[in-house]
Image (cartoon, rainbow, N blue to C red; front, side, top):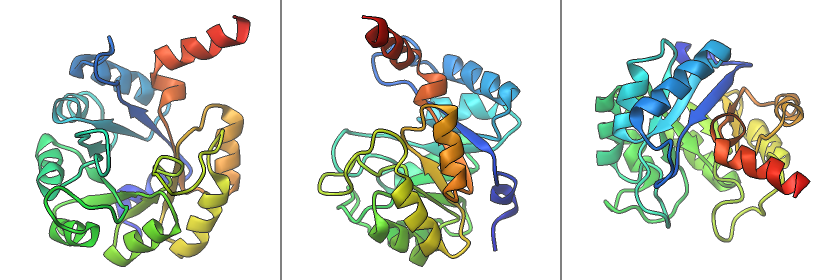
Length: 224
């Protein structure tokens, strides 16, 4: 059965508010303002990273917060350990996002072991790169499956220009009713509609809404 919090996100937009290290917008208060602006625009939930950002955003919005903690740049870096996940919970998030691949984790736990340890503490969103990850997430009992990592894991699926709709359809068919979010390279309203038409329970949009550096570069390249 779909958790009531997740059920409210069906057919809705989740906005990812994240800034990369070294960027001018990399500040909790700035991300909280961005999140509030997204909420006013109709976002049903916010996805964000880092303990300070989670806490700041949770204090600013009235919609659910999906939290994660990125550490490192290689391998499993999206909430890589149980400690990271529990820290996100303590910061106030309603859902914790975890890398659902089978790559080694710094604390030696498997993905399944991490999810099992979190049962009763939080809802888990599984960031998947391929079909095997989706099955792993389903076996672990995750509340949400997402296409977040499609095209970003070495040796995995080829990176598509827009959302990986083929993978999305595959995940929806496999999930058997478990909510599948489409995340990754949704850059236009047409991309968003295509994802919904392909069976997404909800969509997550980040760069195209909350990353002005990328948006500016798209326009600059077009006219340059």
